[in-house]
Image (cartoon, rainbow, N blue to C red; front, side, top):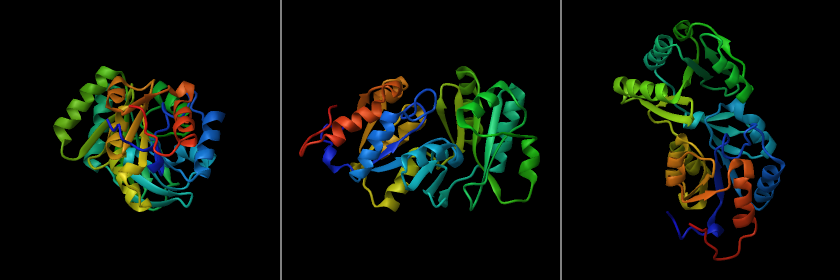
Length: 291
């Protein structure tokens, strides 16, 4: 808890997208767009910190008209927008990616990978081995198209693309079993986080939203005490640690709400926008946030 966080010192917010600022239909409400743009007019920086790829997050960034370095793939890639300039990235090893594909085949669960170019963030390949109900749902959620084929074969190709993130989609219990198995084999080179109840994301050991935000803070010349983080899922916990103050919407996972400095309205209630309108746009000198 940070009962002495002075809202007048805030210079930026770090926002998760899905489940936090997006409605369940994966859109930005008119209320959120309006409040965010008013905040930016007053000098507030909006830092997107998402598990989404650059392409999948771009419609929201463009709608908000926020610029500068952003956190994608749960911190595995930092890109300066709208220039599309990659300033940092962390890839998965070939051995780890192959092991995940093998587990998915053995367990008969959905697994897909993002192959990202080392220089151009607009070059992304989203790949799964077979179409499934899970891939159809993910496609509808993100607007991204899948390529289907053998992941091993693509990894064998001598090109500039590398695997930046893997994602399992399955029932919660099976995901926990997969997490345990992977940590047992790759504990020194893997970070595993849930981004939704049925989504388990596989990342480079050094990749996290929090680490990504620290990278962005240095580039933007910001301090933790000047940032409020907003998030709803396990993958947002590191974001809370990196920022000076943290807020979880009412729909967040219980462990995330427990870790937050403040629980605000749910995403269906435009919780982030309501918070910013109340405590930032209408702030008064010397005011502190309620905790």
